[in-house]
Image (cartoon, rainbow, N blue to C red; front, side):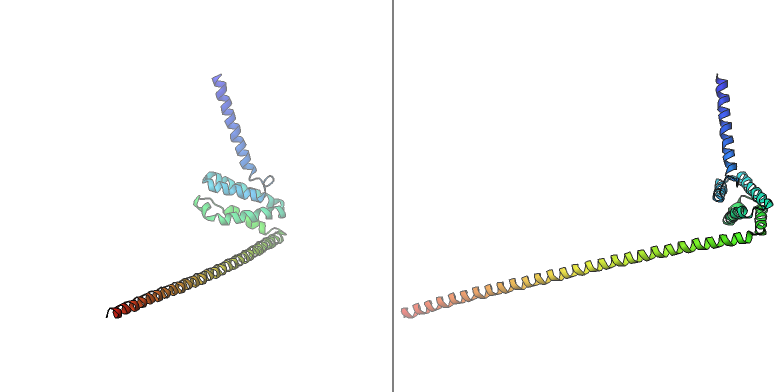
Length: 217
């Protein structure tokens, strides 16, 4: 029983390994994977750091392109070659660091450019890329314009609120100043009135005292 269990486990591992290998191969098969998928698979190989896997992937892609060149399938090979050319250029240093010789691949990519109609395909691809870039730039400009307008509106709101608050502060300050001046005037009038009363009392008392002194004489 134990022996059967071990054999089953080994078989399962082999099946999983085979499935992974098949999946990896399909990701580089131009008949089953899009140009973007192929480039994605190549990128994953480079990121994995597995030199053997990277070399095998580069060779597989080279073979696929060569096959299309031999068939004269200009439209399809041009589509894939453009994406792979970009990949090679962007990952040149990484590939060099893994000692991957991309010369055979670059040579076959150059062959693609000599195919009848390849120049037209490349030109059309360039035009499409330029159009996409122009549309992206236009969209960015629109977004930037919207952001600028929003910022201007927000700034105007802030300034208006600041002006309102400043007017309120000044009005409150003026009211407080008027209150202070009125209170000061009332207090001054009270002080003067009290002084006048005190002076009158003093004068009255003095007059009474003077009269009393005269009677005594």
